[in-house]
Image (cartoon, rainbow, N blue to C red; front, top):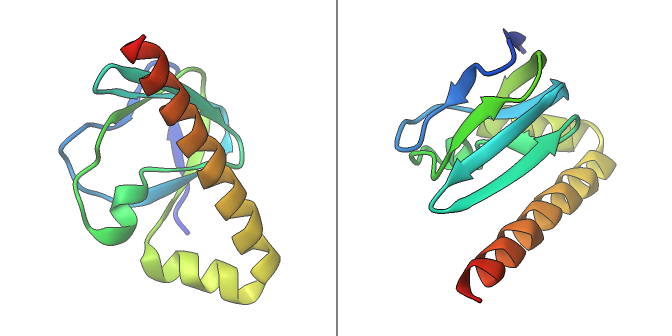
Amino acid sequence: MMRKELRNGEILFRKGTKGSAFLIWRGAFEIYGEGVSIQVGEGELIGLAGLIDEPYQGSAKALEDAVVYPIDAEGLAAIIADDPSDGVVILRSLLRRFAQFVKQLKNSDD
């Protein structure tokens, strides 16, 4: 995997563009768009639309200096095949993020 380093404030991806997903190795990011904003950090997988060749639904900005690793669908499958328990970790991360989005959407409707 090719490592990518970002500085505080640098944009990793923009809404509407296409690319890969990213594993956050170090640092934190704000994912924002559609009136929703969440913060994610080390160990999180972001830019999931990249796994299915769809445009990103939001943008991601580094909140501090960061290191990410791009991951495509084949790379993710290889990670899970190598150690299935990694699949559980990734699924938990995705469910946490989904719960954050739902909570923010609910709060914005109130």
